[in-house]
Length: 259
Image (cartoon, rainbow, N blue to C red):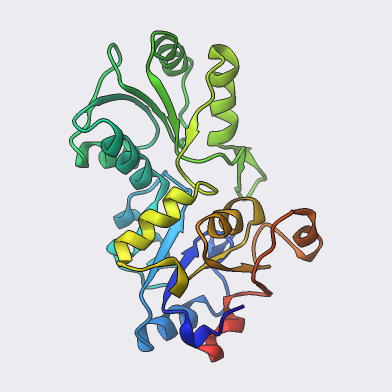
C-alpha cells in the first residue's frame, strides 16, 4: 500500500469502522482527531439511508465522536444526486425514512404516487404492503427503479433485520425489473464523495469493514483500500474474494500513529 504520508483524503465507512453495536469503536475518536490535526480531509460514507446528516451528527456525538454535518455522504444523498443528474426536476415515488424524502426535496424532486420518473427505495422499518403495490404498479407502467443500497440485512441488538436489498428483491421478483443500486459497492458513490472533497483517487483511501461493499467500491474507483476487522468481515473472509484490500488492520486505532 502507498504510504499514509501520501494519502491526503480519507473516506471512511461508519458502521463497523467508527461505531459498532451502538458504541464507538475503541480509538475512533482519536483517529478522527488525528485526521483533523494533520489536515487530512475526510468524509464518512454510509449506505444507511435512514438518517439525515444532522441526525447522524447527533447520534455519533452521543457516542463520543465529533463529525460535522457536511462530512457525511449517505446513500440517500447519493440517490437524490443520481436521479437529479439523470432527470433534473423530475418526480419520484419514495419508500423510506424522512431522510430520503428530504434528500429528494433538496434537489427539487417532487413526490408522486401516480406519475413517477423513479421509484426510489431506501431503508426503513415501516415498509407497507400498499407502498409495495404502488411501487410495483408504477414500475410496470415504466417508472425506473432505484434503491439506495444492496445489503439484504441490517444489524440490531436482537439480530439481523430485513435490509433494503431484501425489500428490493420483493419488487424485483414481482416486476422482473432489477433496481439500480446507488450505494456501495457502486463506485459512483466514491467518485461523488471525492468530488465533494475536491480530491482525486490517487491521493485517497477507502476504509471499510465489508469486502463486498466498501472495499469493492474503493477498488473499482481506483483508490487504496483498508479493511478493518472491527465490523462484519473477519480474517477468514479476506481471501474469499477475487479482489483484495490494500491493507488489513484490526481497527482504525491501528492507523493513528501512522498519520
